[in-house]
Length: 342
Image (cartoon, rainbow, N blue to C red; front, side):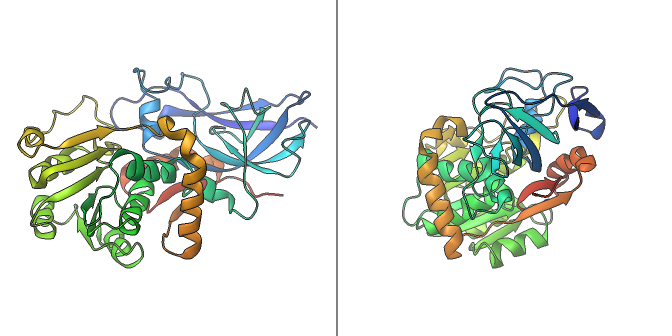
């Protein structure tokens, strides 16, 4: 039986805010798998703000997605045909399989790279949230870039997002003196206080961010973990403590700008407060993934760390679901379910 593979490919490069029209739906007939290969049906697709940068034709830490290519994305799928003993039929697997219903690979080439088995007992979507790129980014951002020092006053922007929400909780677990998250809207702020158990939340949509930071941290912010950039970063810089640290993880506020915004007006605060500012990429820390997964799993199973997944439905809604990230609609990790496991 010949299967038809639905795919969402990049049709055009966005100018400003990304739109559904930048993607095009296509179908192709799948070939028979060869020796050593497997056929995977995707079950869940993951979305992260960094994907917006992947569709711009500019140099970055990975090549841009080409026009006409399947949109790059992390996914979890199920092996439905196998000629490879490492990936038996029925096994759940994860990888960078993209916005498509099926993918053929052998674990070393094709399928956008490698194939990883999903550990038994792990809900498949957890491999895309807590144990996926965003959870691991949070872990290494806290542990490897600017480790928490006991008693630190910690501020996290994008704190109700997939990465920020985990950062805020790890900071609490690692002995921070006070953890405050910045998020958009009362519902997200309530979640941070009541579910993530952080000490405070700032609603950037309805509050004066600079004033609220000063109220929460009268002695200044020791560690700022920034996922947003822009005005949030600008408001934070004057309110940093001397010798404070800033971990630069993302800048979602500027991802959809036609022209790069001007730099922070308060950049001289880095000099005045003698700040240490570091950026990082998850790929630099792959060697430590095993330890990270053990810690994240233990915290989750004990109930010390909670994770939200925003799961939409239907492959036809894939581009629309991606846009939710930039509309502030998601709480936690943005996913879409496109098929059920057999």
